[in-house]
Image (cartoon, rainbow, N blue to C red):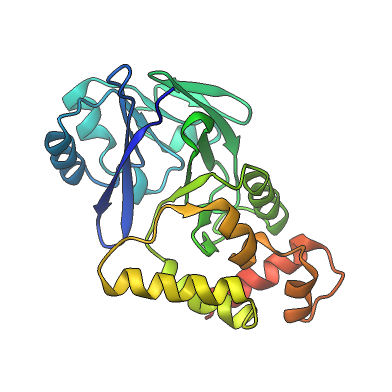
Length: 256
């Protein structure tokens, strides 16, 4: 089975919207359309017709283009059951363990509360594509606006359990600042040092750092490593509950 062709669409100041095109059927989903115009331009450039809108959470910078795209193409909006009241025009509500197909590609849905209480992620295993919104960033994670540390840590470990080959399609280009913070936690992590240099080189050329590779994230992202002894020691919390360690790392990042 052919994988999705995935087009990264920059939007607003630092958002990433994604088009996922299934060549076998012609189906094309947009994931978290922050605004409509860049999506319309990308569709025209690629010669694709939109068939689905997928939302990971209710924030305006992830659903701002929904209404215009739905009206223009007459397509359904698929999003989190737990956030149905906060996503206008939601047609299909999905939650943990559900599946949803875009053409020949089928996603497993994960509930990933923490950034918001109703956040979800879409995992398309045949394309190694994880659309995780603002739960997981390359070298980082979203701010904890509505969830608890226990919820957020559980969400991250759920995503961490996916294959190393999973490509992390997250909602923002935050990687360079995330790298600086990660090095403040694990300054002696050689994998992280190498990743930070790679990130700096990409950004110097104006290139995106997304998608990330989950196997690399497991070695370098401090928010996925709150149960790793070296990380716990680095923040002075050896042997403590990983959710508590995660909360401390998140607290540090909030004021970094």
